View (cartoon, rainbow, N blue to C red):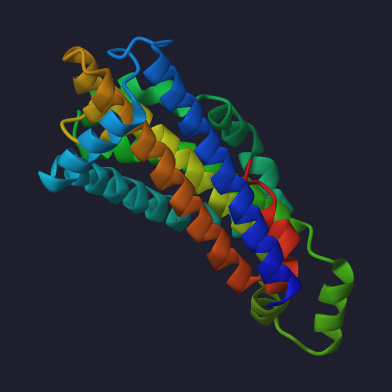
Length: 263
């Protein structure tokens, strides 16, 4: 067993211990009557309810709809942000032209635009996807611009000496050099898209985890609210961990940089 594998297993053990301690404290408070069982049901009751919702398809339906919106919105954002960032990062004139309007939009919280987006696009999928795009765009865009524009000038000079054409320098030098920073932006953007989607579903949706939570609040069902919250946190963690593993395979020589940005 190599040192890296042993270290990863130790990290997994430590995280598991933290989860067990939280569940133990929660269970103790429930058994001892330190918390209101209606407002904060015992963990085994939440687990039983979650299993029933999985078996009858209710939870899986909401999870699937939320995941569909997140991946679709993230894909749209990637198609918009990455090419624009590459152009801006490689051309200072474009950066100076777009800096002010982009900075203005960047400082507007995506959820602040939700009422306007609903008026413009209705309460269908378009408004939710627009919120995801707004939330995800700038982490991807800014990290890509930074990675592309900060490419080592010595490497570019070597490319010129070797006779590489501009497109070849971009593909062989600039993009590989910027990849660690780009992946950090992708991970951050994906996390933002997940949080923004839940916020959009809380305001206007007919399905999804956010809708499930707000409907449970109207029905005075804190147990269902907790199932929704736990589902959101668990899915977010699993998706981020999957993204981290993928980034390690893509850029194994930059493992520390790919870890950055988790928190």
